[in-house]
Image (cartoon, rainbow, N blue to C red):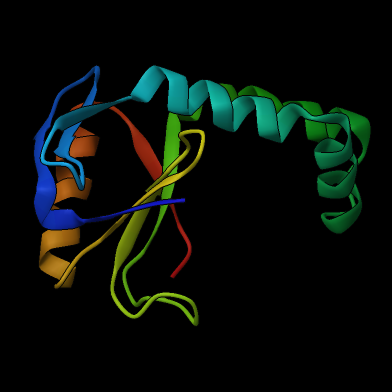
Length: 127
């Protein structure tokens, strides 16, 4: 996992995000690729079977969810309250390896989240 302070995010567009890496270089994240990575993970046979089992669904119901997932444009996940592994609010993008941005405040995370929405991309809330 690539860990980056959220304050290093420089720009968010409909194509992706630009941030400054640890070497001081601008690095980009392609949202279409993040979405593709998320869909591929969700559509893996073992993932679909587990989803079906955990949610007590038929194959037809799972297919309805797959159709919805393909429209959602999910590029990552977020947690505004932190988690046992992370002390601060964060957004993690579905890059390979994942790129994780921690924010010093919830407001800073919401600024990025709002920019993502304006660019027509979504993250899943784990809070």
